[in-house]
Length: 132
Image 1 (cartoon, rainbow, N blue to C red):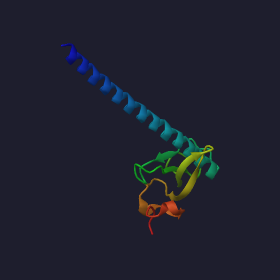
Image 2: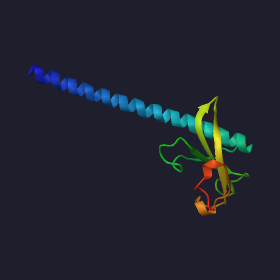
Image 3: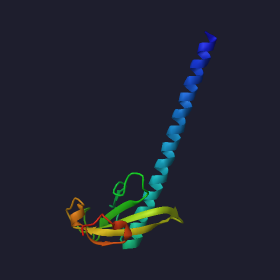
Image 4: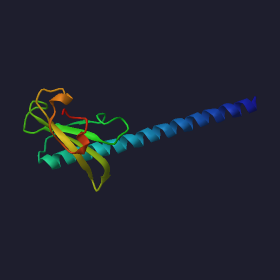
């Protein structure tokens, strides 16, 4: 009876340890992503000279595993997506609170960000993301 209890306790402790490691890893990843997104919005504001609060960020345009994000915001004051938007592709590691702007494009107002409607594309990061 004592041996069975020892095995059960060991298995339970190993399972709890595995779960604790998984939760810690997930939280560390989320903190890293949040820090990156805060830097991205700061980079958009710095690049455009607009201090808008309503910016949208997208992490899946380049794929789930790539640390490239897209930040979009209006080019003139107004409600979100009611004006032409400038979207910037931002990537690389955070160095001294900054990341590299890899390219970008403009999107007309009231648009679902369809690739065919993007225009004024610039930078290498836009390969395949804008209509030709």
